[in-house]
Length: 252
Image (cartoon, rainbow, N blue to C red; front, side):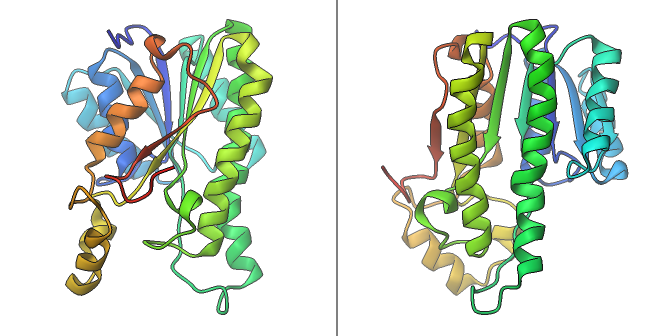
């Protein structure tokens, strides 16, 4: 079950020492995958690759600006030249900004969408061409509970809108690529135990926890485990779906 031996897995936005991308990449590696990570931060990629190699994981990291079409093409070509295929794409790269609509600027909106939606589109488009030739692929996008309930924890309206756009994009893509043996699904994390959560003032943190029936934030590993399942051969008949990982803070 959930054996990724000889599969090539690309995880975007995995150059942080404390982010979810690092945990996601390691979890795939522990299941036998050849892991490729990319991030705007080359030093962060190198550090996480070194850590994975010490764990016995076949890992490679590349610096890439996913909002640059040429950089995306170069990244995908480099991976295919090295490994011959890409079996799984995890779109983890994303940014946020806490700002009200009243104070938001057009440049703010463009910056958020440029990474969270347009960059996601570019890498997905390029990888899909590889997967179509293989007649196999798994794509998992990280959306957010904010994209479903309209914020309420972190980020502004532009962040919520970008994550809602990811949901619609994934569903439409599923209709286009399912005949090629490619599935495309989303996970929608709620409050997760990351550095952002830990930085909240106690009063604000307590208020957020009060809205979670399970009474705690989720762990990055809990998100990673759901992603690995959706990317597995065992999830072959699941596509166009969105999986909520939020401890009950939003139910639909």
